[in-house]
Image 1 (cartoon, helix red, strand yellow):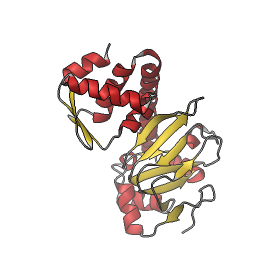
Image 2: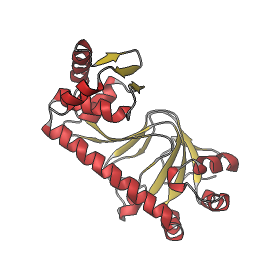
Image 3: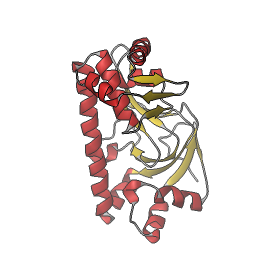
Image 4: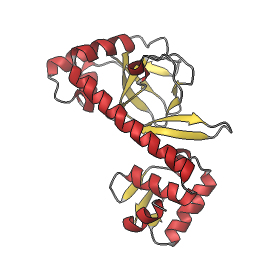
Length: 236
């Protein structure tokens, strides 16, 4: 199986039609499609694996493909004028990234990097366009997902420009926790990148929030102790 030319050498092809079928069946945008329909999509895609640290694309780099993530985690980020990383999105299994073909643009405006070893399926621009014409329900789900991401990106921008460091960290924790009481596997550096702050600033804020009894810092997780209190600080 060939790896698309746009990909750097860090990606290695994986084989196994059953595994690829399982991957695609678990994607939210393909829910309710029949096995035959999923099999047809399977024939359009390449399945690849990549190691942690792999860069999928950089700004102004042509890579007109849609990545469907089955396993691992990917950060989509931009760099500020000072060279500081600002996370635009954290992509988790079952979702997609690299959706530039949907806007008829050929250049990415951000970086995408694997922060864990990852398993993905890749769909070319031409195949994606054909799929959207054949399966309008998939097109509607893609548009819905992109709309939700746009709202979240705008919210992050407002946080970064209008709110102080403590409020921004609180909002990031509440957003990333997704309604649960624990935020697992997110480092201080990732919080810093997602809020546009320095890691040292985030660490100081977290320690202060812990001393106030709003949360507890564990080795690999942040436990929310007072959600209402955290929400109040986030809104200041």
